[in-house]
Amino acid sequence: MSVISAAVRDSSVIAHRNLLNVLRTPGALVTGVVQPVMFVLLLGFVFGGSLGGDQYRSFLIGGILAQTLTFNASFTAVYLAKDLQLGLIDRFRSLPMSRVAVILGRTTSDLYTSVISIAVTLLCGVAVGWRMNTGALEMLAALGVLLLFAFAVSWIGALIALTARSVEVAQSLGLVWLFPVTFVSGAFVSTASLPGPLRAIAEWNPVTSVATAVRELFGNTAPSGFIAPGGWPADNALLYAVACSIAIIAVFAPLAIAKYRRISKL
Amino acid sequence: MIRVEDVRKSYGAFTALDGLTLNAAEGTVLGLLGPNGSGKTTTVKLLTTLLTPDSGDAWVAGHSVRKDPESVRRNLGLSGQYAAVDEKLTAFENLHMVGRLYGMNRRNATARAHELLADFRLTEVAGKRAGAFSGGMRRRLDLAGAVVARPKVVVLDEPTTGLDPRGRLDTWDVVAGLVSGGTTVLLTTQYLEEADRLADHIAVINHGSVIAEGTPTALKNRAGSGRVDVTVRDAADLQGATSVLTEATGGLAIPEVDHAALRVSVAAPGGHSVLVRVLAELDARSLAVTEASLRRPTLDDVFLQLTGGNTQPENHISKEGVPA
Image (cartoon, rainbow over all chains, first blue to last red; front, side):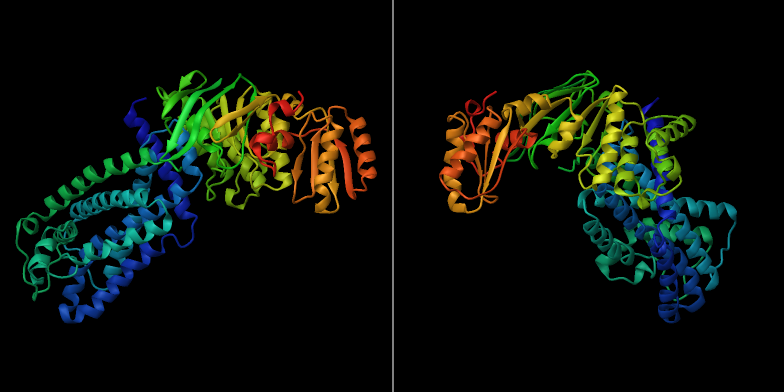
């Protein structure tokens, strides 16, 4: 059996196990479900009134999707850290199984959580007046971009778990970076309204391009008061979002796998 | 079947394994006995390829852990100190998952899981989640997981630590069953009773190297054919009792003194005649005794002598002092 088919098979076994774990842990999905709802309501109605009302709430959904999926990286961090603390990981490491399966299985199974988060966000969006103005093909493309990005940031979460080595540390480390990364972006506002250096960071932030790409695919436009953002990433949002996701995987997956090979409990 | 040759492993300034050498023949149980921090778990990690030795090498079923860790993993099952079961999965799902990870297809993994559930008396709880299991059941499930692929060698790292007496007896039954099936077992334990009961051969390790080895009987013989224990009522009489014991054995053996328990113990090759002499002498000197007995030596005696785990300074316990 080739190395790759063994990795795929073992990873799917681990992913299946992770899925059963999530389904059998009451409350495991609360964050993934409650958070997008909370942000849609908070931003949509607290800020929405000043920022463009119904038009802003439509615009907001793409941003909430990008933000929620980025936050799901913290699931990967926490659950992988939990696995690493169990005796189970020693069993896995003593088995003749693929060395990437434990992490690849984790990042893959966390996509289920992301699918649920996307569904909840869109339903919530429909409830507050968001509509999709394009077709099924665009919907599929948007889902593809979102899941690819979710898979990519999940590898960052995996590296955090492998570096932290304890659930508590993974929990806090896994969360802190998410706030600046999701807020210094065009997820909720126009990057053009930000001051100099922040504006540059926000323009090149992958979260911005994912939000923008999804809005374009859904046919959601910015509220009339928003200054249209400029720059290459804004003009090529879809391409840049996909390229960033691939780049993140290319950097963080090998780092996480190398780290996993090295760690030993003693 | 298991061979460890002059393995060294250090973590910074701490030497975990210091020239460890071990051998276990096919179908036997090698008991690795030692206090906490003596290198037992490091040895387990070495054999299960979880760490690479600084120098030396180890072979499992003829495969070197250095050169061919993949083959080592194929021939070895591990049951670690913490039961490696997924609490959210049922007993069946746990075993099925391990079977799949050994490369079995779904049908074979299912068949093997059912077979093991029957072998390990878990069929009735096959559909229950492991999280609801007692310590003993969890341990049985873990052991079943270690033998899914019918490995030639099974490594059991302190299999009964933290179990209640019933769980311990249960686990011993299972291990005995494994061995009768021809599996070679390396068992680490802090419990002498466990090593005595399960192991064909015992290696006592301390500070990362073997300080004594042999069959349980041979090791017990090192502690003499019998032992006389005397417990005094007052600490002041401890000294007197010690000299009585020394004289009673003709100065051949040096008694061990347990200051906390007010007890003196000595190897007594002469058996009951030593006890008679001791009692007469204690009486003659008017030493108040609360307990005096003649008993067969236990592995505890060997262990305490070898690891210096009693109140006697280590250099008092010389091989010459203990009649073979």
